[in-house]
Image (cartoon, rainbow, N blue to C red):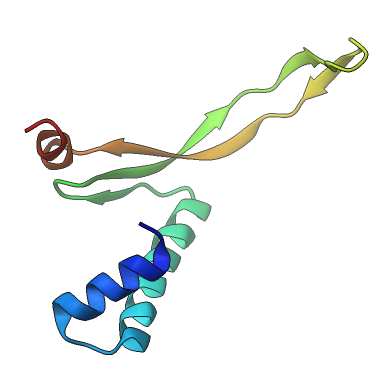
Length: 91
């Protein structure tokens, strides 16, 4: 399922136009995005938690020539499934 499929499903389920459904979906995704950029955790009950994870820097190597190179630390988005989602997947 992609964003267009999600928009269609929401529009059909809620009985609203696809344009309005797309606006709602964009609003939810943008709100989650903005919270993560601020370093906040977003928890949706029985679904899961989105949070920022920190990956430390390290010294790696270039696979083409074997030279050592420094890899900078980065922040990456993480997701941990909630109890309700885990149970639904393992019925």
